[in-house]
Image (cartoon, rainbow, N blue to C red; front, side):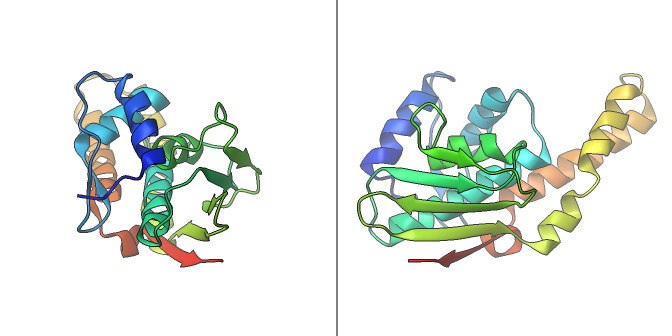
Length: 184
């Protein structure tokens, strides 16, 4: 399991309050999240979408990189897209507006810079081109599915395609979804 530092344990505990009894562990093998954490994200964000899942993967990968470097202090995040990924980042990195640890600059970039305040360690996480290509059009696909009658074959087909994309975003190896590099 992914070792959670003191800061991430506090954040996980507060998120667990959203969903009683949730197991907040990540799969160390590929930095994949447990289904329980995705349930927390879905409740926090209000629905499942490719954007929130990409944000979750950004937050998890960046946080894990800092934890591997021995960072356990308070984190600060800079996110460069004012859209659904922000919620995934807040949940997985523990950097929220409420704790003044998140700054968002709306540049339309699926990119996160995560920093440790005390040590100055900093990493940058970006969504890969392949993941962006896979997710492109998912918002329109979801909108189209919702416009179709419940249970219709067309809606079922679109929902299956979206479920396959969401499963891939949740479980694909980190290198297929996110690139992470140290900045300092």
